[in-house]
Amino acid sequence: MKKGFIKKILFMLVVSIFAILLMTIKSDAASLSISTSKSSVAPGGTFTVTVTVSGGAGNITTSVSNGSGGKTGFLDNGSYSFTCTAGSSGSVTISASGVVGDYATEKDQNKSASRTVQIVKPSSNTGGGSSGGSTNNKPSGGSTSRPNNNTTPAEKEKSKDSTLSALTVKEGAITPEFKKDVKEYALTIPYETSEVNVTATTTDSKATVAVEGNKDLKEGENTVTVKVTAEDGSTSNYVIKVTRKRVPVALKSLVVKYENQEGELIELPLNPTFGFDKLEYTLEDLEYWVEKLSIEAIPNIKEATVDIQGADSLQTGENTIIITVKVKAEDAKDVKEGEEPKEETITYTIKVNKKEEPTVMAKISNWINNVWGNVSSWYTQNTEKIILGALGVCVVALIGLSVYIVVDYNKYKDVIGKVKKTEHINEEIDTSKNIIEEIHKESKSTEEDILEEGKNDKPKGGKHF
Image (cartoon, rainbow, N blue to C red; front, side):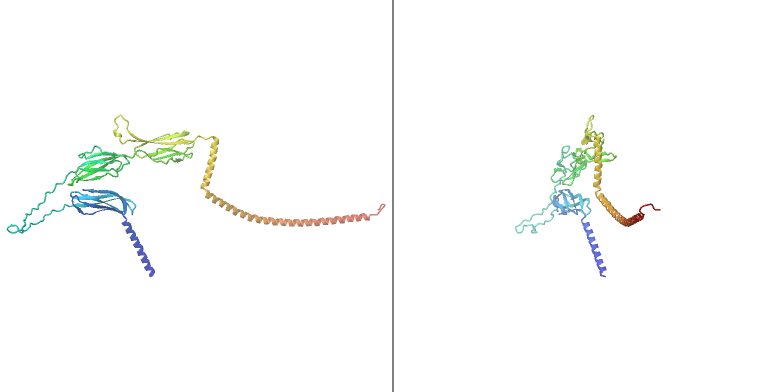
């Protein structure tokens, strides 16, 4: 019973922890919000705007419509504030936007928020009573009564002027020269510039200005709008067509290869390592049998062309390979009739030395060196396997030797036994031989004794018949 109760408690704890984690993850989701110190404001009044990013970080731009103010800044799970001045009527709209990196998902998200503050005119004072007097309109107590003459003054007419007295761009001069009645202008900026800083001065000090489209400019034509809002709420737009030049022509990749004697393409390392802004390179020395190089040069502009010279017929000694990248210039439309079209070009050079063909003896020496080098390389790459193999061979040899020694020892014992038997037989034979010799000696001695006795038994003198 107790064990079941404990298991239920543990299960509830695990579920609670999991729910808390989910709530934490959800709370970390990035958000963008705007708050204001006032919900309504008098014409021309001021209030504080606070922009907050929660659960993420990013660069946030805040703009104000029908009012002045605004700010751009990087917020990392924090906020910034600024003072906003309201227009003359209607409402003030504060808009904030930017790309925020979400802590929870670790992804960039486009966030935006807006808030409106109403512009409210203060009410007129319509009250006020007359001081009292007698019914016969005579002065009382020495005071003189005055008639009530409370009247509302005529409201001042609001300005309708939504023009500019000056318009400049920090990154260059606009064309044509500024005039407040001219509403369209042009500006060309280099590729390295992706944002323009516009300064606009209103003719009427009570008018407000908002600039849109001046950031994150793309290649080609961009539209920057300067919106001017007059005191009465009427608006007019000044437009600047900003042309951002394309990226300068260059190579985005460069790969050099040669074909070895087995027909395989081998890449050659460039020195220094390739970079689109590095124009001079060298290669390691080539063998005498390499006749040409395979070069892959890809431009960064689709319309560009690439011309390669000096890579097809390599000579002994130093060779220079020239790679030229060309593209029609952006201002080629301005070329007059009969003139050559303008081109934007960039040139890369690669220097490489090709070795001389060696003599027969040198070829033999090189072959031996290559073989030895291959063997050494193979040994280096397979050292561990070779050592393990050698140990395996040694173990097998030791086992075989042990078996051989055991078998050979048994044979040795048999041979020793046979030798002993043979020696024993030889000893017996020698013994028998000695006995026979003794018998032979005794027999010979006996025979000699008999002959001697026979001689002694012969009659002496005359003939015997």
